[in-house]
Length: 237
Image (cartoon, rainbow, N blue to C red; front, side, top):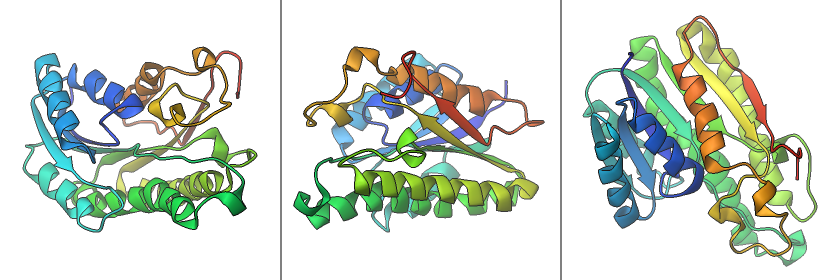
């Protein structure tokens, strides 16, 4: 089985946590990123128990300028193997745009788009030096269709999709695969503070999204999944 050095942002809960635990079973060396260090260290222990060959924790906001270089340093110290980056860090707040604090709106762009750009920028040089690498950007159906009272979120996710598409075009010839994973509503903590959301029982489970990420990472290098739209059984909620 191929060896990987896999960075998962937003790893403390939801899709990121499920992805880390799933990849750990295959022996991936993992670099886990989120803001809550105590939660990450507990997850790191779980990943080691599940079979990960090594686990590093980089606690910090992915949109902070220092975090990207810290991720690159952790990868450099995690042994050998193809570098995989799962850009999953997320945040959301919904409501009429004129009532939403502008700091909240800009924060979504900082995390969902700028954070992914910073992590990618930090890890691409290693991928290019080795002539291989895989990037999975966890986007959202909000990048493909707009939703009411979600202007900033939709804008950030649409920007992430455009960023992914451009990356795929430019870096494919250099051995770097880029996949835009576009899930429908997923049952994560994102919904905890949001009123009037769809029934969470009808949403995708974090495990289902993690399994799609694993499929991409494990796929032979004679193919690339440019975009995957993953929806709950009842469709977009």
